[in-house]
Image (cartoon, rainbow, N blue to C red; front, side, top):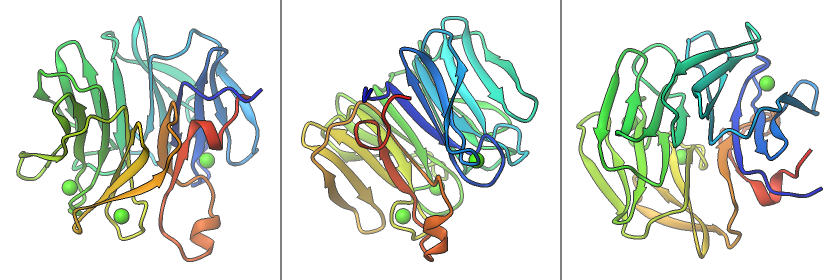
Length: 246
Ligand SMILES: [Ca+2]
Ligand SMILES: [Ca+2]
Ligand SMILES: [Ca+2]
């Protein structure tokens, strides 16, 4: 089976300091533990409509976040249990390790708009709902920017001055953010008809990565190999090429 995942995310769920890959297929939500190296089924419950992973509680263990018709739930491998985050189903969810509170920043899209959680309060950024979102520290100050795609293009919200900046007029179908260059600040990567491009600051430069147009994209570090080679960068994962269905 080589079906592409509907959604993918990376987080250190088993707590060994290496990212684990999480994927959603028709068959349910699966996790590939970095410690065991094999896929296991997390839940056979109907596929999550959105997926993310992050350390919501500041305990250095990432939680899996998914949205179903009953609302947004988080799963912790630490307590091995599900928790209801909110009974409002989210259309999109994303996390970032950068924040100014306890735990990772979380952003989501609900019927009411685009919301950001920074560990202490929810902040409504706009009632106009984006079709794709990502969170990453583009400015290098340790706080995550919120990136979104609308019909007018891709914009990011600077968490320090709370201003919106448009980085392209072309709407992206999927977004992710991660430190793809290893310079300590995150880049935005997006998917367009021409493939995947990423945007780097402070150069204000777009770079073409591949002509592949994946169904899911995420970024992160799933092994210590890169660090062992003295590389600090994160890798880009696209469903079509990196993961096949378990
Ligand atoms: Ca792990
Ligand atoms: Ca920032
Ligand atoms: Ca970077």
